[in-house]
Length: 195
Image (cartoon, rainbow, N blue to C red):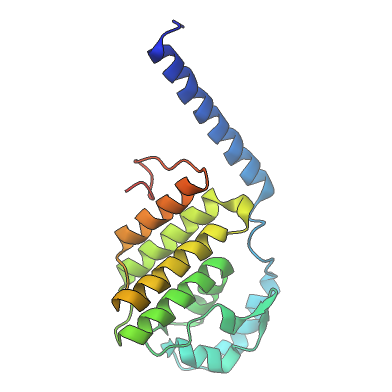
């Protein structure tokens, strides 16, 4: 390869691509070690208690019924929003939410903050965008114990408090990209966070 600017740029791009592949392989070998270990039996044992509720049920109803149950190092109340605006269609929806405790905890904070300024439920598309952003952060920031998820959730809650409305999904993605870049993680324009 020629020793000119284009050749050096290509070599640097190739090295970044190889490093990213090595990072992905290492992360796959580690698994999701940043999530608290959930025993599948814990969610299975929860099902009979959830069956006693009438669905659709609000987050407040679910927390009242099973919020004190331990889940990993915390309780279920730490992961589900205690509001009347958040509803669950069936017990499986509750269990699905609890499978990703770090993301559930971040969403709880955003949803509860939203409920303080609005009686409206967070739209499904916006909720899905927030969750996807948090999943992307977890995948990028796996070695820092999901610190970026908490940072972006803090920012969203601050925005809700200051402006009286929930930031749009694009604004959350931009903030997540800023956090990643500030911590030395590359975010390309063709990725979810690269808005």
